[in-house]
Amino acid sequence: MNPDPILTAAQKNAYRDDGFIVLESVYNAEEVEALRAAESSPAIQTALEAGGIKHQTVHLLELTTRHPAFHHLALDPRIIGAITPLLGPDIQLQHSKLATKPVTRGTGEFGWHQDLMFYPHTNTSLLSVFVYLDDATPENGCMSMVRGSHRLGPLNHLDANGLFDGKCRASEHWLDQPEKVVAITPRAGGISIHHCLTLHGSPPNLSGRPRRGVVFSYRADDAQQLGDTIFQDTGLVVAGQRRGLTRCETGTWLLPRRSGHNYGSAHHQVGTWAQSENEKNGV
Image 1: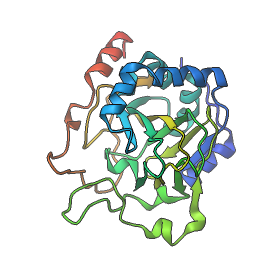
Image 2: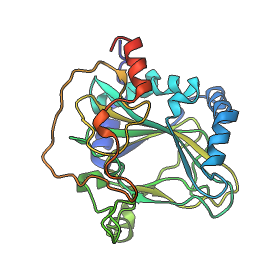
Image 3: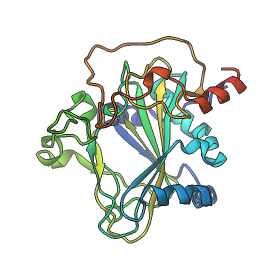
Image 4: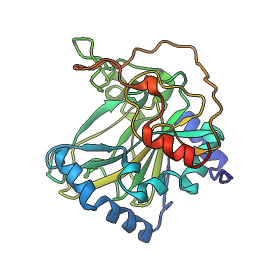
């Protein structure tokens, strides 16, 4: 049984109008410490080191497969109860990751972008949940989001050679309208939820302290992936069931072709680990 929706009408309206919401104190101090302990496990720390965490922000993907605490978190009724009013009753995980900035002062900037440009789908019923393991502040490089930018549609993320590099070129939306730029600053244990087309980015970490968070990107069951990577946990059913339906919104997507490879493995649709979990759970 899926959990009851937990968002208020005001929160649902804010997500619709602004493209993001923040929920404080979703997890208590003991739960946050347990997640930090999982993040500190040798296997995850080794992977972060390999990703260059001393010098740059690392997005450690397939997190649900790296520690059971993060698998359980992806299915947590508090998260699922918050996103079912926004995505509907049938929901899958699109990907999971640990997002952590280096503690070296002045490093870890992440440019403005829209998530869906990384992994276009047939519709825009996707969102990301950020679970904060540390207080988010401007000093430690918290995310900022552009209010209402999810209604702009897909924006240009191509470099001079026509390749996708994950950086939005439509800078007028944050430079020329600073009143729409909102710093996202929940305390540890809070979460933020943002639409897949909400413009967001983060400055360098100036604090000398870690800024860690767990990110789950979720999609409605009827959103079919068109490009980029199918990860091990892509397609994990977290609410409802798989119905075999695809819903298409009117629009044209430019698939994210990168240097060195074309459009990814999206034609497979479901990662191997997610497939085994789905079969285990009969969905």
